[in-house]
Image 1 (cartoon, rainbow, N blue to C red):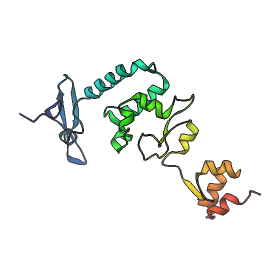
Image 2: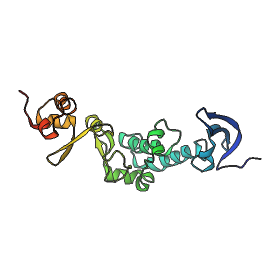
Image 3: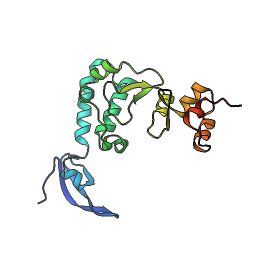
Length: 204
């Protein structure tokens, strides 16, 4: 009989990736009665220990415990439960770009909504939670409530330029200098101008 891992018991081999034959996926039976296909290596190492029912139970228990504060279902509470879901729940649609990449929620917030509320305050209208360091974790000091414009500028794929002691995005330099972003971009990338000149020479 095959060894049991957490709540999962291997039933049968399912498939392998075409480019990685050794990367095997198996069908597992969970103690809750559900079945799940997962990579055998992840289950064996303990990265996956159930079909997802453990997380759902933990979340349900947290929701019940925290419902007494009167914030259940509010934007602030939904932001809190959302970051935990995408960082801790392997079945979340967004887990691959958060939890799977090593982004975590600090223990202080993960264990208590009240702690999160104390540190962040209530979520203002038209904002969502944003990590200041986009490669960092969800924790005090690295999170803020930000609007869509601020968050768009804080993406990892934004090009930033340093000048006069400031490191800003193209859009931010455009606002400061009054020079169109397309003009600044053309000066730097097509004409090869130095950053200082591209940001300071006025348009004729």
